[in-house]
Amino acid sequence: MGCRVQFRLAQAGDSAQFRAVATQRRRSVGLCAAMFLTGFGAFVLLVSYARGLTGHLVFSGTSAPYLLALAVTVLIWAVAAAYLCAATRTLRPLQEAVVNLAAHQGASPTGCARVQVADSNGRE
Image (cartoon, rainbow, N blue to C red; front, side):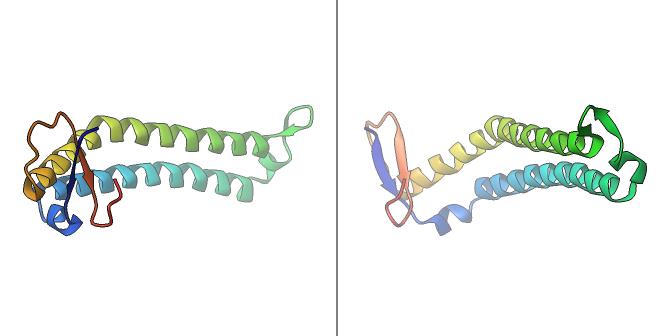
């Protein structure tokens, strides 16, 4: 078990590293939201205004709007997977820098291989 360091979130929020994490997360979420809203908006517009498409059967008993709805579901999963990859690749190192900064500001644990940081309520 690692050492436990408590710090106030407001102290970490004032750092440049925390602002970098917040900026990168906002950028990633904005990009994912734009991708989803574009795909979903295209689906809604096609189903609403393309009258010839709504009655078109692709397979026996399967309409084109049903396949478009399935495509939107796949799009949601793809956007979620893209966000998880981006968060793992870019956000995790930035978050670790914030945690290390907060750990060194709050207390100086010695002989700890891993530092577990808890918020002011004691949650890790």
